[in-house]
Image (cartoon, rainbow, N blue to C red; front, side, top):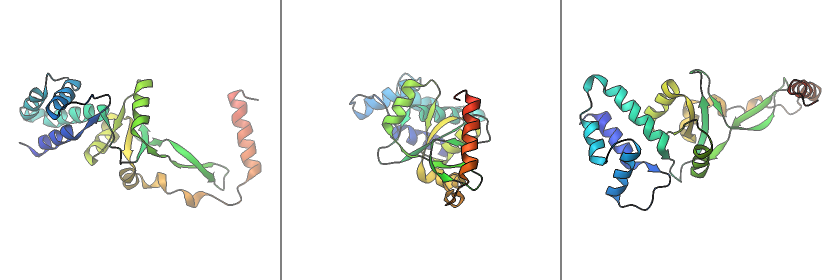
Length: 193
């Protein structure tokens, strides 16, 4: 069995999905395989092992994408929600930590994105939210899939350190007059004043 096939199989066996009733291990594997579009676990495993070698990369990436779209995170792992839609810039759910010397907000990623938040997001929004747990999944999301991703904090910090390291931009005495003017301009553009 090829190493990438073994990796996908291992990922599949360890994934946790929402709304799964208390099933025995074999029943759970069959249930997850059906969520991915296969008749049962044996069908899934057979297709995985007999995938055409000339398209194995595309086949594995497509499976990885489906698994990440279904998976919910493990309870003990903290995540940050990232997004990108243009293939170049990464956005993130954030919180305010202060003002910079130019009167701009300084924001850093909000951590602690949990299983319940992911289930809620998937319930209310049609856009996919991929739960990332491995480096290969992060690369595939970043360069191929786009949309939203819940990424473990440690992995996000390793790959996108600059979005976390912003405390040095915060000043003790921000230009309050400039900040007030910016806020008024923004309110006027929005039709609030």
